Image (tube, rainbow, N blue to C red; front, side, top):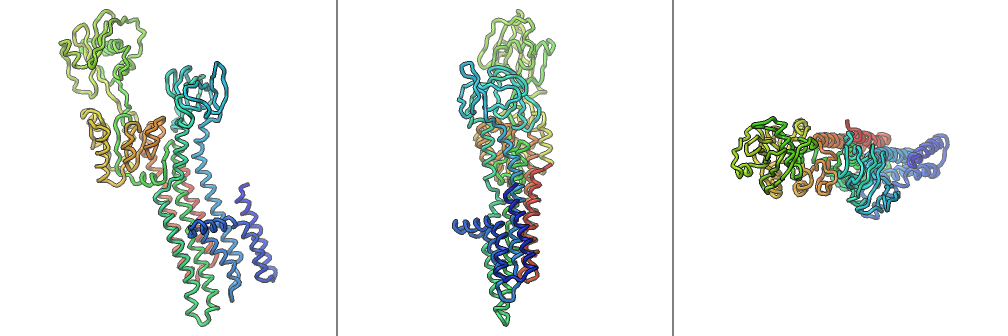
Length: 622
């Protein structure tokens, strides 16, 4: 059983016994004090210690000091002339304060578990192959270049490249996506993924501490330590608020009795009111529930594959009004694909077939896209005399026919007239057969399948300005901007140009987010109010430069992050308004002597419990 819960139960039982003794016996006041001190010290010793530590550390004005002053005063008030004892109230206040903290601990543990579930991604044991023998050992002891064996059902312990085997990997714990990924020879795999089917042998290319999952875990751990602006405001508020209310309580206790015929008789009454005032004024509901709401928001986001590095970025995400996108790799796939085939004197499949065969041995991205579009190389065609002309293209003999594949420069060098492509935007690959123009193929970087939907979702959140930055050509950028209904774009930019434009955008608007792939955009990610790294698994630049890391390649996660942030901030604001509203009302009543101690208890601890319960809603955002 939780130690604090056990203390609460024991204290409640002893408090009931003490109350019974007080009501059924005529013990002197000092003996009753001893009876009540037992449950009081059991439930409140840690609060007293923390208040003392605050004094030692020159930070005395906190909620613990307020609780100690108020409850000790309540224990002493019965010794004043004409004053009733308040022993029950003193223990009761401390008991409910601890109940409030128990709720806080529960909520914090729950949110921490949602974050620390990432820890389970990192296996404690890995199987390494040495001299033909497999050995199980701590992943931290495995060096670069070693071969790790991962059996079906096991988690990958270290980042690396597959050197043997093929399988399907479940990366849902990292990305939030349940769809398995097929991997094979030469593919890079990440620590934390679960091997679903075949046996894999992986050559380690990152040490345990530098693995993707280790970096993610460090990021999440650090995020809980970073304070949001709202939290900082609460802390500043408490440091100013506490001495003010203590001073006000002193005034309430000592000044009004001067206006009575008997100062001594009036002092007991006003001291009681001052102590009630102190109990009501304790700001623990604000100090605890607001940071807890932000911590819960971070935890709730992490369960959805959105890593937010601190509460301050939840604040900024909630207030975003402009989003600046990098184009390549963010709005588009960042990979060339064949988007159109325009033959002149042959069938489209035949034109694509010839181009793919000529480009068979090239590793150029355009060549790869042509080969991917026509992957069947085993069709008994004969390819001979492959010749590459730098900056122009490649020629070869395919089944005895001379086929040339390249740009307009290559065609001009062969005195071949080309056809202008007017309908499609991208890189134009021209093909000739035996000296005659055969047509052209359009190769372009295509828009991701969910980009349009993601932009619409973001517009639905109230974002009113979208900007696209790219180093690509003007016509390509315009085509992408038109398809996505992005009004403002800037093309043919160098990395420094992107930074300059971002700063100009930030001059005109409040909170600006930049969304990039985190590799070439690190300076811009770091400069934006909120830097959001897309699909940043394995990218050192993204993890270190971005403020928010989306664990998969889906732009739709941005709208989700904004929604989570606004929900979190809304709950924090509800707590602030509720706590301050109740306290102001009861403080006025307390100063006028119209607040019984039980109402003071509710105003302090009851508000705390309700605020904590409200803050816990951030853990289960639908």
